[in-house]
Length: 558
Image 1 (cartoon, rainbow, N blue to C red):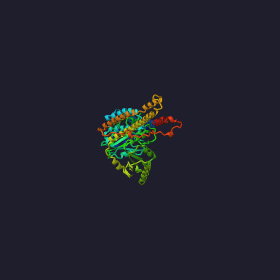
Image 2: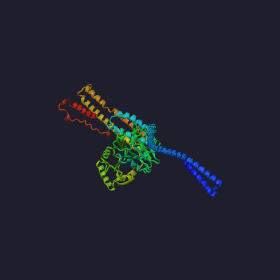
Image 3: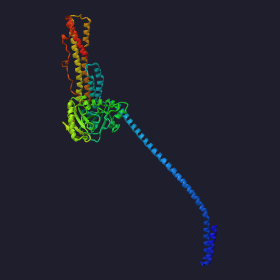
Image 4: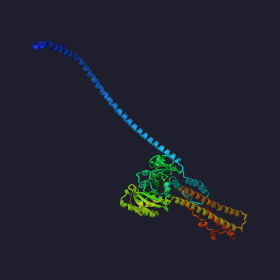
C-alpha cells in the first residue's frame, strides 16, 4: 500500500514538473514515463513474491547444505571403508597370487620331477658290452662266489668289480670320457669343491654353490664345445637334462632329492656336465662333502659313502681345505684320508679361499700342513694356496696347482686300467683258492700218513680207520680245482665284455701262479715234549699222529 502511495506521489510530481517545464508537455514523453512507472509498479508488486521465493530458496539451500554435510560425512566414512575394503582385497589378491605362483612353481617342479623319473626309467643301456658285463657279474660270478669261500675279503673283491661296472656305465653312456684323465675333488662340506672346479670354466657358468650341502649327486665335469648336462641312469642309459630344464644341474641339491619319496641316486647315480675348459683331457669329479652339515635329511647321511666310493676309484685326488673355516688341516680330514686307499694315487692338497687369509700367513699354514701330512705318512705331490674366486694361486709348496693339472692333461688309457683291476681281483681269488688247495693237500697227506702209522695197530675195517678215510675225502681239493677253472672262465668273459665296450681287444692275460708260489704255515713235525706224559710207549707214534692231525684240523677250521 505504501509502495502504491509512493508511486502516485511520483506520478503527481511528474505531472507538476511537466506543467512547469515546457519539454514535459509533450504527450508522448509523458506516456512513456508513465508506462515505465507502471512497469516499476508491477515489478515492485513481484518483489514480495521474489523475496518469499528467495527465503524458500535460502531455506532449501540451508537444508541442502546440511544434507550435503551429512552426505559428505557419510561419503568420507564410506570412502574410508571402501579404501579399507580395496586394500584388504588387494592384500588378499597378492596373497592369492603368491599362492598361485607357489602352486604353479610346485606344479612345474612336480612335472619336471615326473618327467625326470620317466626319462630315467625308460633310458636303457644300448651298449651290448655293458649288458654282458652286468649279466656275467650278477649271474655267473654270483654263482661262482656262492660256491667258493676261500677268499676272506670277498666283499672287497665284489666292491672292486662293482666299481669297474660304474666306470663302464659312464664310458658306455658317454664314450668321450674313456680317454679323459679323471681327477676326483674331495674335501669336507663347504671346502669349496664346486667353486674350485668352476674356476677352470671358460664360460661364465658355475656349478651349484650354497650354504647347504649341494653336491648331492656326483658329477663328471669335462671339456665340451657346447654346455651339456647329462643324467645317467642306473641301467646305463642317459637323459639330456636340459630338455627338462636348461639350468637343471643347479637344482640337484639335497632338498630336491629329499622331495622324492625315494632316493634319486638309486636311479640316477651320477651326472655328466660338459662345458668349455682349458684342460681338454681332464675330467673332474665333483663329489659330496664327506662330513655334511647335521640335518635330518634322509639322503645326506650316505654322502660319506658316496664320497669314499668315487674318491677311491680314481688314481688322482685333489683334496681341498677351506681356509675360511680352518687354519690348518683338520683331524677329520686326516682321519678320512687315512681311511682312503690312496696307495699309488697322486694326491694334491689345495688350501682354497686363500684370498680370505693374510698373505704373510699362507706359507706358515702350508708348512704346518706339510708337517702333519708327513707325520701321518700321507704322500702328496704339492700344496697350493689358491683362490677359486680370483682364479689365482698365492703360493705353493713343491708343485704349482696349475703345473699339476697340466701334467694330468693327457689322454688316459682307461681300458687297460680296468683290465688290470679285473685281473687283480682274479689274482686275489686264485691265490686264496690255491692256498686252500695246498692246505687241503697238506691235511690229506697227513691223514694218509696217520693211516699208514695206524696200519700196524688197527684193523683197516675199524671205525677209526674208516673215519679217517672219510676225513680224507672231506678234505679233497677237487671242488677248489673246479672253482679255479670256473674263475678263469668268468674273468675271461668279464674281460671280453670290457673289450667290447671299448671296441678293441687287449692282448693281455692274467697272472699265472701255481701251488709252488703259495706258502702255508702248517707245521707237520712231531714234538714229543708237547705230548701228554701218560701216553704209553707201545702206541706213541700212532697217538702222536692222531693228536698232531687234530691240531692241524683245528687250525684249519680257524
